[in-house]
Length: 202
Image 1 (cartoon, one colour):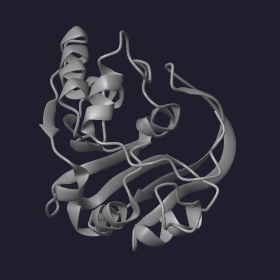
Image 2: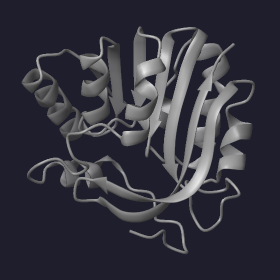
Image 3: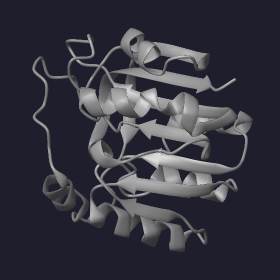
């Protein structure tokens, strides 16, 4: 799956409800492999997953012992997330909310995860600008996102340099932009340029 030369149109909750109503899991049941690679060194505690969808990353974190809150604006996706959690014998909290209206609060989280969430630029800048206050000292931010043809940050697929600026004073542990092969369910298959960030609040 290669990136289009023009930004994809914004899709509302009804689009995602329809996608998540399809049989099976659109992006699989296994966690994102970048999150998987970071997990051994993540401090357990309260975790927030932004744009969680059907629950694959939230359930994985809950199985590791995190107290997980999953946020998404698709009620259908969150229902599947709860079902997946039940299947694996763990509990997660789900909040149905649009990220443009969501406040991460002050020093609430030991971990914030954004895996292919791709909010529009103004929403992304507001949320990521909250990280230095919303994470506990020593808390981590783990992100993987698609990089588009225009990496300037004006649309939903910014490059690594833009993302590094937007997360502000967080200390970077890992930062990489590269073309890699995705294999996550039906909709993430094939080559895709992505940005990966693992950062920490001092």
